[in-house]
Image (cartoon, rainbow, N blue to C red; front, side, top):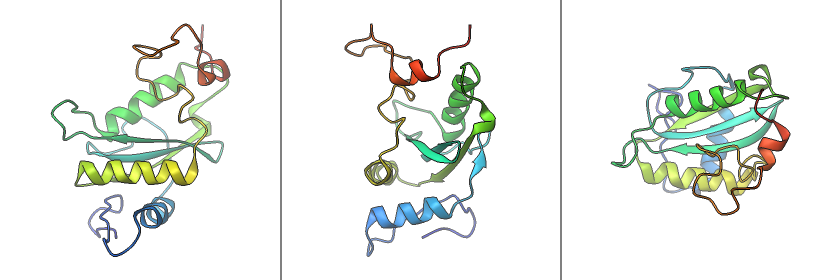
Length: 152
């Protein structure tokens, strides 16, 4: 159920299934152009669309002691990544996001959405903050990096 004060704020109705609620609420939220400072300085989940297709789902947990990231910071990182790539433009990108009061609910919502949509960029290397750092097989070029190589 949405709060009337913030159309992006999401709170679960514990009498209904999580997946159904979060899919319904995400799809009812406005699709916005992916651009700098589009999102609030809050925790939440976000969806990225490339040429109209939902391609990536992510979560930001800003309230934890190990992370002070926000939706705004994370989406700005994606803006920077995309503008530095060939074969893609910010004009091709849109986004949606939902904010949550609880980090646990954000985690549950991300899991439910990824399970529901199975976005093509999740697991492709797109979301890596530092591509390959600390990951096995880092000598390989990710699927996302092959499709959208860094600009020279």
